[in-house]
Structure formats: structure tokens, C-alpha cells
Image (cartoon, rainbow, N blue to C red; front, side):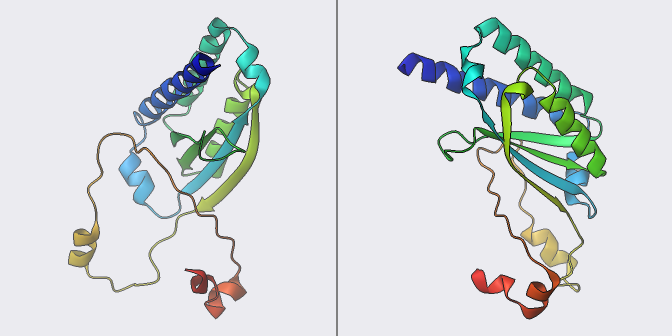
Length: 181
């Protein structure tokens, strides 16, 4: 049983590394992640028990097929994967997708779910959003903006934290959303 867990962990780690490195190749990530009007999709998945009953060769072929989906969409989306096993009892991994068109993110997810691995995935939750220009401090000095920017490390990040906030205009106008923090 202990050896089986190690194999699962190694497979997920290898898939995560493979997906992140592929998706980062084609899209100008810095520009895409910094511009307003970019759609962000956070899709969380759990893997069903039948996946682990497949032989190693079938799982490897499914990983290659999934790798192909990331490559196919690399010119339109920036996608990162994060392993959630051990952090949540309802999810195994998350895919973070950024694109200029929401349909590009949707097409990516449709293709992902159409793979052999995708047939063993259950989408537990999906959050969609769009970036907007800074409007809380419109006269933010440029030198202060530059000083606050943290240089990004070139290696993949070990964690992604998503805090889902659902608000409406009344909540925002009343300032209620900020009273929780």
C-alpha cells in the first residue's frame, strides 16, 4: 500500500512538471498575467478510483495525450497545474488557466476532459474571473509601483492559494466585502 502511494505521488509530480513547462513556452506569460481584461479560470479536479486500476502503460499514454492538449493550446492560454492531494479531501489537482478569450479557456478544458485521463476526472469546482485595471488607487506613483513589484523566481511555485470571493454591487458599495479581512 505504501509503495502504491509513492507511485501515485510520482505520477502526479511528473504530470505537474510536464504540464507547467509546456504551457509556459508559447504565451507571453508576463504580459498576459499583467494586462487587464484577461480571463482567469481555476478548475479543480478529483481523479476517480478506476484511474488507479489501469496499467502503467495506459496511464503513461494518457499522460502523453494530456501533454498534447497543453501543447495544442499553448499559443492561446497560459496554464499551470498544482497538486492538491493532501491539502483537500475533495480534490487531487487544480489547473489555473489565463487567456484573452474565455472561449479559449473553455476549449482547453473541453479538450482536457476529452482525454483518457479526463474521462476519469470529476470537476469539483471552477472559478472564472477577469482582471481589471487598478481602480482603488488611481494615482499610484510609478516609482512606488516599481518598488512594490517582486521579481518572479524562474522555477514553478509550490503552492497556489485561491480565495473565492463572490460579491455584488451592493456589497461592494457598502464596503461589506472588506470587513471580512
